[in-house]
Image (cartoon, rainbow, N blue to C red; front, side, top):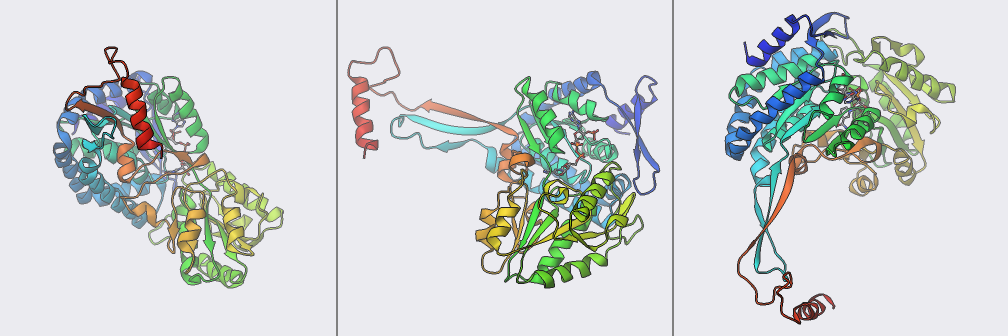
Length: 502
Ligand code: NDP
């Protein structure tokens, strides 16, 4: 048994440590028991991570790469096992859990292979005025990063921070969602198994209060993924000690269909983007704006596809249950609000909500101020709105405080429309593709948060730039000295006038 596993068992055996249960949302069956860590334990885990971080940093990029590669190989070997844990805690179909892990592994490989190139010391031009200096910038690890994750993609989402933070030389203390502690535990244990000599990846479990304790435990950065409301609380808490935060929150992503679009592909993308993982995807498609010239044909294509989908807990189901029971009321409320105020239920409707499952719901022509349009639904629902042209589509798509992802289907104007969306990411003529490209930064604007995971920006997010100048030779006229000769500054002013005055 690994040290972490032993500690967990010991903790649970200790009558003083309270525990909570992890539940399979498909059946209500208890699938695990985990400690509720208090502030003292969280502090101890942060201290242990800090102690281990120094040696991890000293390994350098290639040393860390070797260890992270071992972990990656272990993840590949035991992919099925971890996929089973994801299924048990979220209820999502096994194939979807495996797909999630494929992305995890690819991102881990990218982060470890590119960390050195992105973060190592590099020279920059010192400029004319400081030409006697060599100027370099290097990206150094923060120290200990606290990662707080959600339950909907319990491996992929937090690993977007964990893999990149570790590759950059940090230690990580991870607080998974209370709904998916087993996935967090599995990840931490597997790291300990692959890299036993460097305990730089630590786990804390519990409810929101454990996450809150992590923000105050002396970590050097917090990477939070979850709802906007909790993101604000995390930020306020970190502000007390000026701890930098990365905040990845929800979205209300729109898909735009132009008159010249491949309608079948756009329908397929909308239904997958809206219904896969039961719609519990931060970059899921929640709204469609379709050009009126093709709207009727398009709506029929979407409806035909959505009508075939069945949620369930059995193998072969298209998507699973609503993982977080309290979300069911929100989904029901959005459907009711849209229909009560004139929206047309084209597929499904109020009766589609059968907890813990929700059947596909497609609503057309809902009022733009209904909650199905204005708030994150996080269910297998889709609202299809007809617009007179793509300019109106862009205006309506952008009329939200969120700004996470977006999708555009257009043969002629895809890139132009993508640029006009106020969002952190856009897929043109496909859906969610950007999340599978490890080199692309992932994150949003507005209520969707700020900061980036993935790609070079994601590596830099977990490192502090340090700028260094080194004097190559002394100059006769040094203006930054009390001993400067008279007239030095006026010579420099003359120089800047010549150089920059034209
Ligand atoms: P929550 O905001 O409820 O929780 C997120 C995490 O924060 C959980 O681990 C939670 O713990 C923890 N937490 C709760 N309260 C506090 C607190 N006061 N201080 C510190 N941590 C706290 O979000 P969900 O888990 O419900 O996740 C769904 C949300 O995540 C959706 O809005 C979705 O759009 C968003 N999301 C965004 C992504 C992105 O990359 N932009 C990706 C995936 C999801 P506990 O669970 O124990 O309460």
